[in-house]
Length: 286
Image 1 (cartoon, rainbow, N blue to C red):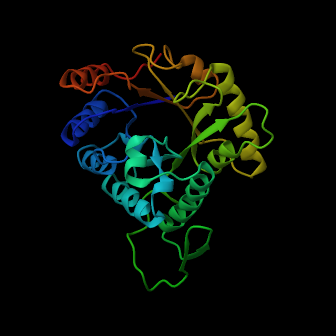
Image 2 (image 1 turned 45 degrees about the horizontal axis):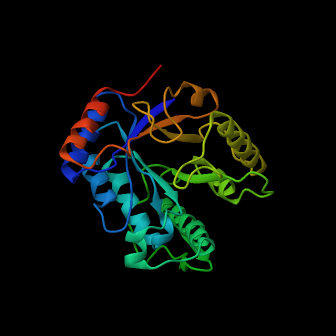
């Protein structure tokens, strides 16, 4: 199992300091998150990329339906180049909140899901650097000519930077569309429908169910299970959310990443000090 942590709040400078500290103390990844009208996650990650050498850099969660695919590809490609191939894109529909609706209005879940799928398909083609044409419901483009337009160089990671997608299992539903999306990419943030609003709803047993379903979907699509990431967000320092305590039972159930998600730490200078303390303590390895 590998270990990461989410920085729930920090200035750009503090984010870089926490990333450097995480690298020194044995963490495998540091993650930022995206919202509307807040500090820019990709600026934080780009700054951390040039000050670190090993630790992976990523997001939890990029609401890709908000992006034009070419804008998202440019951002991720830049961090991929700066980090020499250490960026991971974490995606989902995103949770509608007042910051979102104040600035951008509201679209249905179905529309956002379709935009998300199309955005990721175009993103993957663009970052591969190969000519392609795409004709979707929301995005259409023809880049079969190698002449113009010219974009950034192909990503360091091939065929494109890895994508971790939220995958929610809905009991009793014949088709698990969210898990089908996640199974198509390189990793999953698993969730189980029926938990409290804003929570993952996960238990160790439900994670086993989700992993089994993902294995089936990957096999049916002719995709290997080896190398696929199952990313569990938890809190080994307290009891925030449903997932806390030792990561070991989750690893036994199929998780390959444990990501510390300290959303209950206060957004204050004292809170940043607490983040430093937790990062300095290192990952909760057995």
